[in-house]
Image 1 (spheres, helix red, strand yellow):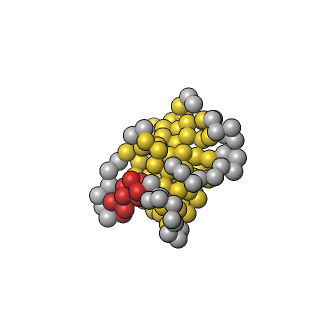
Image 2 (cartoon, rainbow, N blue to C red):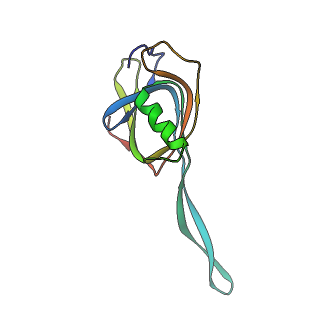
Length: 139
């Protein structure tokens, strides 16, 4: 990806081992195990784990390739293909500081900035991604 200036750190988004976007800010998903209550005896309530819920991931202020925009637009019209996404955090020395692997990802919301003259890349304000779980991996 050309034309992207690093401030101090940046997030590179990869799909199928190919870089499809760079973003200034990423808000990672929270994972919550919801619980259910039930009575085990007349006077005792018990709690047990139920569903695992993952909040959406938000990517903010970035440049994306046409490939990522095609996937986003396809998802918005119901042709969603779940993908595995890797997000890499680069430090100010342009080295990978941390990596996250996110499974079962689909775009659910986005906002595009004004058109850019930087090749076929698109300036984007934010992308929100639904997901099936985040796992930190070695950088």
